[in-house]
Length: 292
Image (cartoon, rainbow, N blue to C red; front, side, top):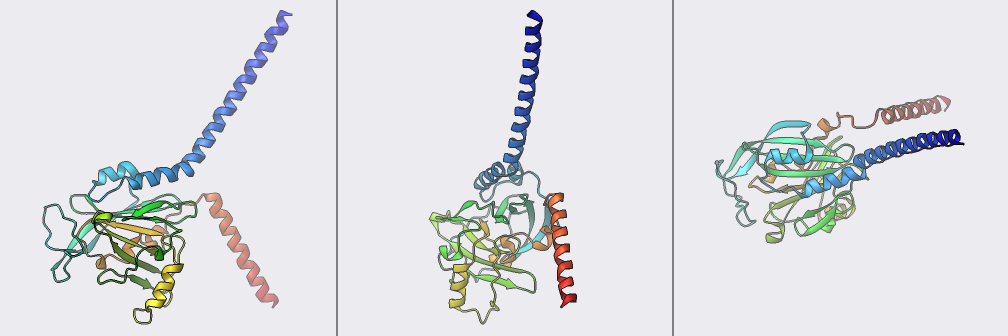
């Protein structure tokens, strides 16, 4: 009898160890999935909401880790380039007759996995003068502030914001053979923290809606209003300096697609399946042409 009890006890201990191991492995799988999907989205949104103009670059790396790209870009700035902190001008203080000077900024880009991109523009002191957020996935639809307004990237139409048809407020748009960008500027005074906000549609983001027909002369108010009702905002840029946005937009609303698209962020198995799918589709099309 005692021997039988000892054997049963050992069997129960082995069963308990197997159950605990399975539970531990399952917790690890769930934790990894959470960090790569829902948890990652929450972390990125929380990090973005902790951003503000003139924060240090070191502070940004604590939120988003190290950037993948870094380059210099020359933009125009109102006034003279001094070592004193830049004061954010009000809309009435930005005088178009004030002399513009060229300044060189450091542009850094973070790929947010398959979800989107984050970009900062820093001066010589590594202070963030501008920063933008772009979504490129249906799984990443963050709610962000544009002055007193609340928008969801990838969902909110441009028409949800006031009409930008004011002097020196855009809109800016470019439409080429394979690239496009659209951006418009907004200023809300004290409710917007005396910052300038730019929202738009970039070919680096999703959903993409090219501004078809905008050649600068044929695109009237009716066409612009129709586009603003249909297009969804996929990029937002917060500006806290005296930078002339005419030297930045519309391309500066998001990262350069020709650069970021070279980074393969998909899983290798997904890439192989996609390649096989398109190869099969192409072969099938050629077979139909030959049969016809």
